[in-house]
Image (cartoon, rainbow, N blue to C red):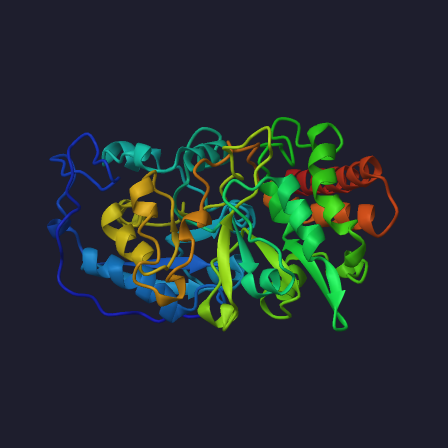
Length: 440
């Protein structure tokens, strides 16, 4: 865990915008709000759960240093990883937590650190309309109508594909507007054994595909706190669409314990035996890509929804309930959602934007040589699917969907049985969690 403190400069100026809220979400000058020049120096501790994803050096160059340049009275202290209860017991203060929507429940909600920033949004005239609307709807659902944080970046929803494998087998590259049926046919053409090596056409993360499904089907219903796997008929059609890929004969060598995101990812990036990887969790680094001859294609669509991509899976920055500097913390996360800040990060290929600005999206990777000549517009769909039910259980139990795929592919279970049994396991765990919480 890193606790390095960085030095600060003298006080700076407040973000400027109209009193009704700037178009890019920056904070307006307001006579009712103390000027930044009147503020005392403050240290804000920022917690992120997964140090390997954002090492301190990367975090500080991408987030910390731009924040402190914009707000010279602010010192950013980065806390990477660790168990929050232990950190708090040791006297640590956490002002900001940032986490994906899936990681939000175990790190923000279960530690009872959520705080509704609606007063700050009103006080500073912050304009939510410049953010991608489904990401705000997701945040609203999670907070029961309030809002705990702002979406700052989002992972890709795209197909990485290995051009060498397509060329090797004489198969045309995936095209814009590709449907799931067309992707299936591509996968069949690319799944074969050659020179003693077993190749497959397609790999992905099935838990994330379920959580971000294009049909906006709920995993766990917010009102009943019950899994929808066995009560919403759309899960059967959704599952059959994915299971057919593993029914292609050339997939038989893949073991049941290898149907998970790390194994699927390694087959594409490391082993290079999968021709396509449907990426939904992270931009893949130059180290991971290495000398791979790769490009991108848009996320596949259902023919009945040709204009709709998956649901978004944004990472939010949250002001915590324990922070004694909530206004300053809000100013910081608001700044991270401005075009002023995001434009440079996008051009450098640091992350994908959560702003509702297609022109800004087109600037992604302009300054980063690993994206030269790549179809970077395929990283994000033109239209995200509406948010399904959003609650603290979805991220926790999305992994059960991998068990659905395994049971249907390897354990001889029909899809209805696999879905019903997964729902039973989820419902039992929720009941146990709710009962334990009631006794505290």
